[in-house]
Length: 122
Length: 108
Image (tube, rainbow over all chains, first blue to last red; front, side, top):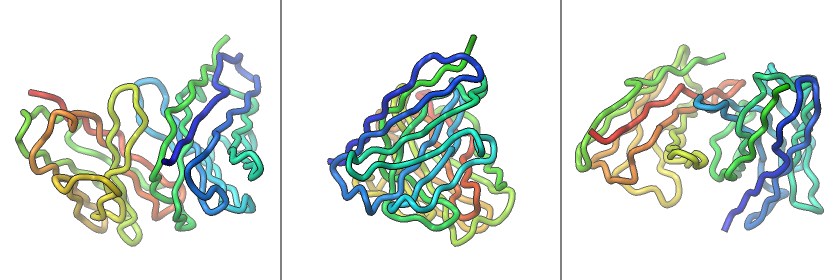
C-alpha cells in the first residue's frame, strides 16, 4: 500500500524558514516523481514543486522560485521542501503527491498524503 | 499559464441522479492531459480520471470523463452518498500545471 506521510508544518513568522518532510513507503521510491501541492484555507489546489525520480530535475511554480527548494533522500525514502522567506500567502496545507509518469510539463498525481499545515503569521 | 474555469460552482442534486461537471481551459490542453480529482472535507484529493477519459485504479465506472481541446466534462451517472464532495480539474500539458477552482456537488 502506498503511504505518504508529511510532517514539519507549524506556525512561523513572516520571513522565517521551515523544512517539510514526506516519508514514502509501499512503492519504488527511486522510480517515482514526487511533488508538493498546496491548498490555502478554503481555497483550491496549487502545484508548488516537483522532483524527478533521480533527483536531477526540479521544477517550481513562479511564486516560490528562489525561496523554496525541493530535494529527496533515497536512503530515507523521503522528500523535503525547504521553505525560506516565508510570506502570509504561503499559508496552506502542503500535500506530498506522487506519480509514476512525468510529461515534462507536469503530471497527474496518483497518490497523496494527508497534508501538513503551514501557517505564516506574526 | 492556462486558466481552468469549472462550472457550475455548486451543483445541488439527490442521490441516484446524474451529475455533469464542466472544465474549460483558456487555451488548448496538449494531448488531452487533463485530470479530475475528488476532495472530501478534511481529506486529501483523490485521482479519478487522467488523460481526460481514463479512470484511475479502483475508480467505479459510474465516473466518466470526456473532452479535448479546451472543453472537458466529468459525468457521474448515478450519485452515491460518498460522491458528494468538491471536484477539481487539472491540466498537466503545459507548464505550469494548473487546477480549476472546483465544483461542489452537494445534497439537494
